[in-house]
Structure formats: C-alpha cells, structure tokens
Image (cartoon, rainbow, N blue to C red; front, side, top):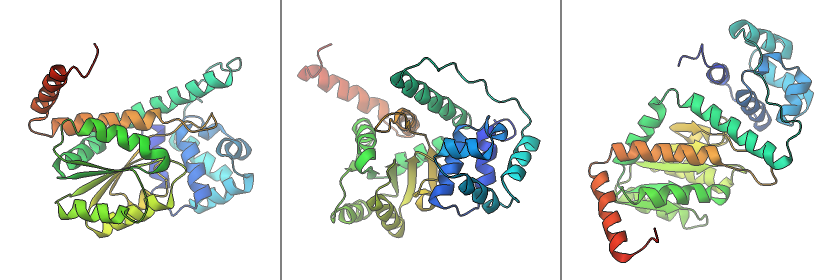
Length: 282
C-alpha cells in the first residue's frame, strides 16, 4: 500500500525529520490514530482528542512549517481529499464496551501498518540472527517482553529477558554483547521509564542494533531505535491496554521462526517432551 492510499502513512511522512516536543508528539500520535478524520477536525477538536491546549495545536502546526493550524488542515485536505470516516454508533456503549471499541480501532490501524510487511520482516531477520537475543521491557512493558521471550525461547537457542531495571541492567547488556548478541528487542510502552531510554542509549553505544515495539512512532525511544514498529495502546480505562503491541510481538515471532533453521524441529521436540512429562491437561 502506498502512502497515497494510507492516511496514517501520509501523516507519518509529514512528521518525519521534525524534532517534536513531548506535547507535540502526543498531538502527532493522536492525528495518526484518527488519520481519516483529521482533515475535518477543528483545532479545538484536535486539542480535545490529544488532551492538550488549543494553543499547543497551533504551535504544533507552526513547528511543521505551516502558518497555523488552518494551513495545516488545508494541506491535509488537498493531499488527501476524502470523506471523514464513519464513526460507529457507540453512544449507548458503557465504558467497558467503549474500551473494547478503542482497542478494535487500534488493531485496525495495526492492520493498515502491516499492509507493508517489510519493516516487520526486516526486524524478524535481525532477531533470528542475534545470538543471544536480549529482550528488554520495563514496568508496563515487562509483560510484553516476558510473553515474547517465553515463546521465542521455544525456537531460539538463547533468549535473555531483561525485565528488571537497576544497576545490573547494563551488566546484563554487556554480558549479551560479550556472548555475541547483535540485536536487542525492546518493548516500550507508556509511561516510558527513564531507565528504558538509558538502557537503549547504552545498548547503542555497545554496538547493538535496537528494534523497538512502541506505542507510537513518536515515543521517547524513537531516536534510539534503529527500527521502530508502532502499535497503539488503549487509554479508555484506568490502566492502558496493549492488545496491538502484543499482536505485533506475535507477528515478529512468526517472522523470526521463518528465519531460524530448525525452528520447527525445536517446536516438535518441545511438544514431545511436554507430552512425556504430562505438562498440559488437554
């Protein structure tokens, strides 16, 4: 799918090369999530969508090189003439149903991103080639890192989970590099811990290629990632939901398996051992 056919990709291209503040990254992220609707939103509506002030939206447009928000919106309408996306009738939904609908929208957006599989395929090859493979995820991202590492260990000969911060984190990165690691996979979700940013900077200095699954292409870790794969989180409930990052992680596992000689043999061997030990009840 070309950027001409993908509103989200058009917006991503518009933001590339600009140094955005955290508030501006939030606006950009909100615009990407509602790419089809953005050309029809007022500055006040976009501010409410992003949870920022209306002047912040104006400053954001100026940072992108426009005279103001009207000029930005006019540009978007010119390059992407389309009707606003039809919104689902969710007025009668309770808060839990609305949270589910928001996650469904995140998954739809991920499906649009994956229409071009090249970045995920490149990432999978990098992960498959790394021996060992360190997988980093702190705080809110720890569960995603653990889930990936759990399944990856069934097919990859040496997966090293880094899901705790502290003074030993750099030591564990050093150990992985000394053992021959070439790539580090990071899951980075909000709120983004300072330790994650510091760990990625350290990994880059150590010579590792950094592949990151993050909630947005504008996340604080973007500048420290050689390859960033965005997957939005849901924000409707008190705590964020991360269905899209989890699914993206599984897609990475699929590609990694394709790049690992003997992956199927290792899976079959595990199944045989599990059956012999009676690990599962089914």
